[in-house]
Length: 169
Image (cartoon, rainbow, N blue to C red; front, side, top):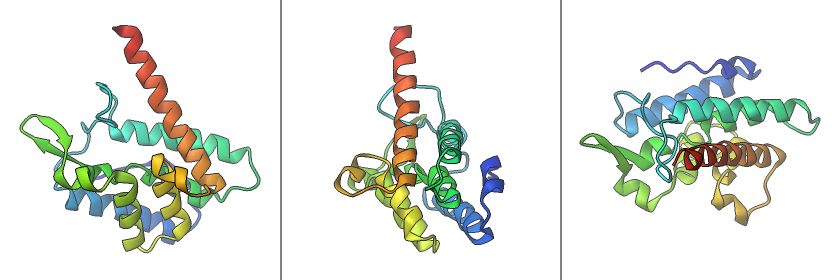
């Protein structure tokens, strides 16, 4: 399966760019996914928004915020945003016609498995930190500016989707 993230072109380091895509490919393989285009971005609410759509939105919002700051490493920010939920490919699995939490996912949440995949690919710890700290796991550490941005952009997208769904009921 080929994934095309336009934001990859904004990463200046060829090594980070290559390793970012390696992480996605490894997660697809380890998660045993033939097609990731219909994976929901969350199982917490009923939504038609996919993981790929959410990833693109969070990355675009993160880039917008990052461009306004002079204390942000854009390569770290973009790679971290693109990978923030990659661990969901291990946390979720397809059972019959449903996508549910896997046995692995019940034990190791996606921020941790995503950071582990990034480490295995040789991405810098700063990117691993963004992935690990984007969710509640990040409440126990001091987040870098890049991690703060991805964390808030992730929750902005989640809460807007949650509000949109609630207003339809």
